[in-house]
Length: 420
Image (cartoon, rainbow, N blue to C red; front, top):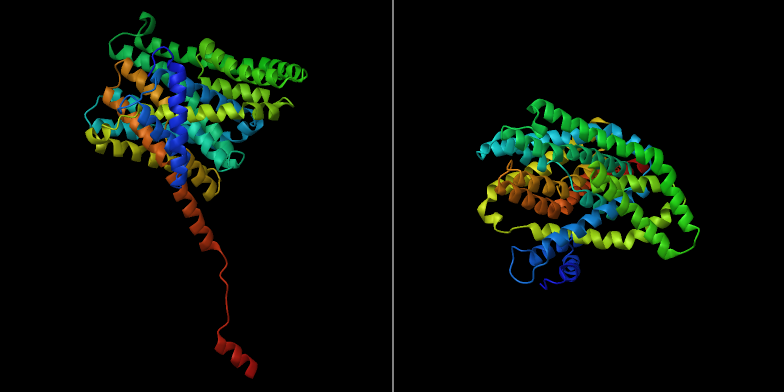
């Protein structure tokens, strides 16, 4: 790859490979998403041939996450988020707890320490925002009850992971016999947690109290200029600028910052226009996210740790889908809605990579754990269409079972009736 222009080269390699393999996947009646993942594997550092720049691809995929969450926020009102909390809050917390414990238990069987197992388990507990939203959009379920619940679920997981990303370095310090700021372990941990929660609360309050007035007004003023280019630029600045400020100033994830930015701008009468203007960019950069996931995948792990990988995939698919289904049913959602919600959440993605990478950097997760998380993410994302297909088949069979049977009178009966 030309070293003097890594951005351009990575874009060309990634988009070309994604196009060719996306078309091939479609011809084979597979989702294009599978083609994008394979494209990433082919241009990644673990396979011979042309290699894209992994760091550049990661940043481009982050833009895709921001734009996608911004688009979802444009169509999502605070009232809808509040309505979904009855399932989303207990469900997300229960799902993360169950999967984290299962991952921790598996790590104990492999001989890892308790701390390593905990980081590994948490890494397996968070669904990919991009996969959930793209899948629900393609199935036209984003505006349904399960779609609103899934978005609320993602927001809760996002907030939980903000805490987790702060606590991993703290845990590393405690394991080394030191605490943040030189304070006793308990005080340091509590201070970090309170500081993180305080930053998130301040950001949310600013967006609700100030952002709801300033951002829609600014968008309306620029829309009045009747310039398509300026309006598109304003929408992008609203998405990227707020997300970057949320991350830089408050330690809030890009995804959550972009979602709140979109939700605030959604109060404007021009929200539909903003969604349409950013749609092409959202689609292109979302593709780059899947390509970047494929680039991280090392096929050698299929040979080195096949049983551990199979166990990790089962923990994610069965643990997350099963918990989501159980909570949704307990909260009154229909069987079809609960299965769709469970299928949507039965994979892991971007936050898992970030937490696993941080765990290795801080010495609280072995490199083998990071490789397992990356491989599990790719396989669960690739298997997600099959999980949805299984959920649809179960729904179809149940619909057939409840269909009223057509009763036809026997011929002899009608003959005897006419004789009488």
